[in-house]
Length: 155
Picture 1 (cartoon, rainbow, N blue to C red):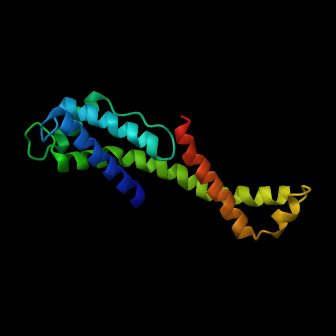
Picture 2 (tube, helix red, strand yellow):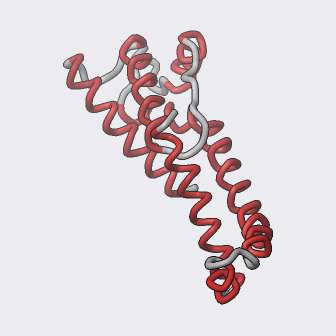
Picture 3 (tube, rainbow, N blue to C red):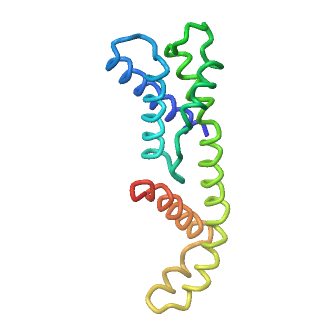
């Protein structure tokens, strides 16, 4: 979970700087913020494993902007933007984490079932029989996590 928070922070910082440089202002207006949110979600969908996430609507962003505009100037500064994105992506991270958690729980069970099934296969069976269960389960779990994270490039 800490890794995901760091990734979100990196994405947030990069997007804030990009939008700030394009607008020439040190803070984001609502329109700037909306563009920034779309860019953040685009990056999240490219970088983090799991399902594709749709960005919130303009109305949702507008109401969250009011909550996060701590100095009430009608614009979002860098600190407010980071808090805004953290709040916005909390649900996203929970869904991603649940997907990864399911993989980490299910994979060892699948591994033991496939090990039993492949032990009788000529050529492969002897290799599979020699691998300790823990190593075989770890390899299958890694393969499943890798597959889950590599799918993001396909979607």
